[in-house]
Length: 66
Image (cartoon, rainbow, N blue to C red):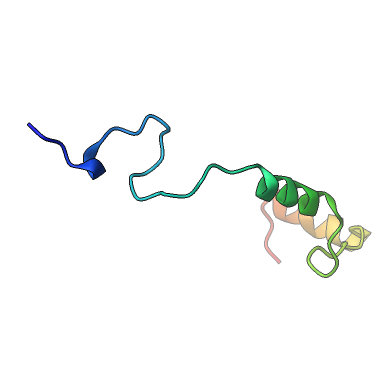
């Protein structure tokens, strides 16, 4: 019985259609570098919760509606 080349077992765990060469880790290193640098515009700092916000939170926690 002759097997087709596409049906051979690939022990690397990659998909049969994945013909890329193995990664050198450059993309992962770049991703980690970007994740460590502070971003502007994405995450804005929120002002601390004031007394009225805390009062509303506690009211809702007690089950009282406005």
